[in-house]
Structure formats: structure tokens, C-alpha cells
Image 1: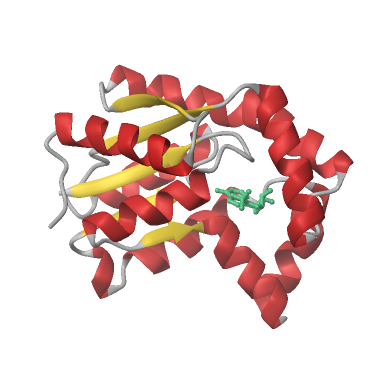
Image 2: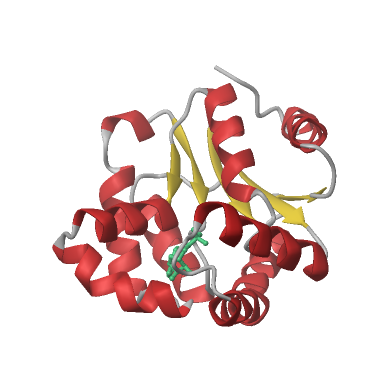
Length: 194
Ligand code: AMP
């Protein structure tokens, strides 16, 4: 069963690769960033709560984020597996996810770490800012998000490394090259498409 997490600094291409893997395995990709952005765009109650945090590059509080994920994973299509993108993002969220999955007799089966040098993610983010005009792709918010990644998100990889479920993938290359590296790593763990 594929219950996966993709982790990497902003600008590592984790969103793009996450969707590719999820499609190949026929499981839903669950991106908390996408859920929050859609809520802001639609002007929902959730959107109003998170908008200023996202624009500043800060994290949304754990209780709110974990509740959103629990609700999403409770839907039928996630019963056969899922790929999480952007959650958990700190140790508190790891504990929340562990508790939720344990309640279903489940655990994560694989973590893909996309490794990209800082200068490369900075330049990709700056390019994306010019192309897509994301409101949190300002220079200040980008720096804030990368700092949070290093201080809060990178430590979650140590926890998953101890469990022996992390594959670190070189995230520099063409989309196809990186996708192939991920596919090979998952196949080595016997995680293959349905
Ligand atoms: P992303 O698209 O993953 O870069 O997420 C965009 C923004 O959404 C982040 O900078 C945070 O403000 C918020 N966000 C996404 N996922 C989380 C999470 N797991 N915990 C807290 N905030 C999050």
C-alpha cells in the first residue's frame, strides 16, 4: 500500500513530482498548500483564517492544518493509499499524523526527500513568482519559507530516517529524469502502481 509523503524545500518541484507519482500509482495527491490556496481564492471561512499567514510565508497553526488533512484522508479515495505534499511540516504535525494513522491501523510507507541546493530553489521560486504571480512568492516570504523549512521541516526527516522509510532523491535534472529516479526508488521498496 502506498501511503507516501514528498518533502523538499519550496521550489524543489515537489508539487509537480507529487502529482506525477500519485497519478502513476492511482492514489490521490493531497497538498495542504493547494487546499489553503483554493480556500483563500474561494473566500471561505478557512481561507479568511489562513490568508495573512500564507502571504507572510508563515505556517498555518498545526490544529487547523491537521484537521484539514484528517478530513481529506477520511474520504473514500484515500482508503487505497495517498501521497501527502507539504504535510507534515514540523514535528507537531508528525505526531498528529502518526496518531491519526495509528487509529486506522496504518502508517506512512515511504518518504521521498527531494534534495535541491538552496541557490537552485531560490532561482526556481523567483522564476515561478514572475510566471505565476503567487502572492507568497515575494522575496521576503520566499526567504521566510526557506528558513522555516530548514529549522522546522528538515528535522522531520530525521524521525522518518530512523524508521528507515526515507529515499533521498537528487532533485536537479529534467522532470522526466527526476520522476524516473523516484520511480526506481519506490520500486526498490516494492511500492508500485495499482
Ligand atoms: P506550499 O504550497 O506547500 O508551499 O504551501 C504554501 C503555504 O501554505 C505555506 O507557506 C504555509 O503558509 C501554508 N501551509 C501549507 N502546508 C502547511 C502545513 N503542513 N502546515 C502549516 N502551513 C502550511
